[in-house]
Image 1 (cartoon, helix red, strand yellow):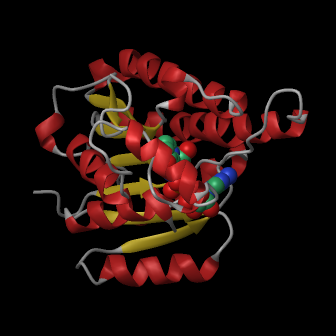
Image 2 (image 1 turned 45 degrees about the horizontal axis):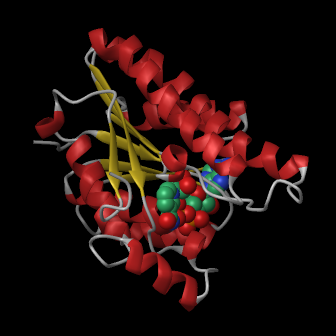
Length: 246
Ligand code: NAI
């Protein structure tokens, strides 16, 4: 059903992005692998994606830079002729309580998580409008819904992503384009590995489903949101958090 379609995943070489790239490849999407720094990780992922029987294209680039985000979208369109799915996954944290948070910690997080998402949305929109179809999934966070001490920058960026998702869903709905967000809770990746075992235990106890999430938990929902099964869903934020926020 999905053969020959193209999906772009930003920040695809590890963690949640990597799991999403492999899930979409398993659904038959050709994959555009975007990443910022580690070339070898991108090559490894490309081999794994292609072993699933689809094609892939590596496009290195920092999505917070408007020119590099535009190049990513243009190269994907040039190579595959269509862009059916965009998953805005690339994100960073620079945590700290506000008294200690430097201006650059705030700016960097907003530049990547919010502006970077905007940059990709801006470049992909005219292409999807012309095609009259497309599915966009933005990776937000439950922190954008409930906040977290030490993450004013991250929470602001992820709340911003939710506002952008809803606004764009309203703008593009009449063109056959679905725009949704997912809000993962606590997922086991490099981003969360710095927490102590004790802190992880405390978090786990507070989660109704009593476990920390996996990258697969997130990738499965993204797989649903880019499939035909979700054609009548747009402007939504789906929490993937074991019931942390309800
Ligand atoms: P990660 O740190 O393991 O991976 C992030 C990826 O984004 C990396 O491949 C990194 O190179 C890439 N990246 C960062 N800045 C970039 C830029 N400017 N341009 C291109 N690529 C860039 O993080 P993880 O945990 O896999 O997170 C993925 C997304 O999920 C992020 O948006 C994060 O905020 C979000 N998220 C993660 C949660 C978690 O518990 N791990 C919970 C909720 C949301």
